[in-house]
Image (cartoon, rainbow, N blue to C red):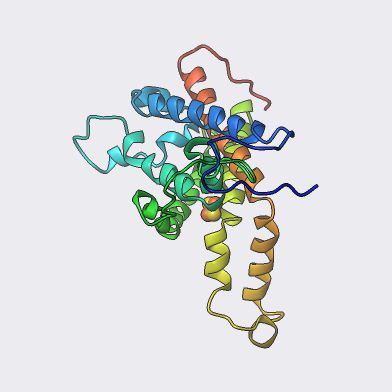
Length: 250
Ligand code: FES
């Protein structure tokens, strides 16, 4: 049944909805805040816990302190603003935190009070930088793939441990998240008025179709890759601290 949308002056949170509209925003807020707190803490930790051969924590990749001599702080501080900015400006991420953290709006047909909605013209104009974050993140994905291959290299021999699978999961899901990005889809498919006339059957059209297919699952890739990158850091850290023991399959 269609519910009438509340007028702008309706009380904050007022609604006639009786479904669990608040569950998704609340779950997002809780998960997102946990991740932000953990990743901020991890970024300030020393680099000794960023590696457990042959694995590297994705939070510390690439280690720019190796090419910036004298940098005393954690290498993660030089890198983490890139994926953080990418996710903060992500089209799906915006929808999620507008609803769960900014409450603008909370959900469909839920009152938001007399709040002055400025869209993305105020502080959030930064969201228009998303495509530039995409360009930089594509470079990070290349480094993730280098660590992916490193994770199967045990002193020059091909091998596999549980950590190899953890690093692989992070790399593959991050790649899918980036490949399904709306900006990437626009980048590939933009400036073409008619695919049937200009590109049908051509490589560019096929790439656009592949990205469009992945784009349907962008929300899921957002969450799965977020969980995978966090767990990869925890796994490497725990092994490096001697709390967990890596399982070696062969
Ligand atoms: Fe989500 Fe680009 S729109 S990563």
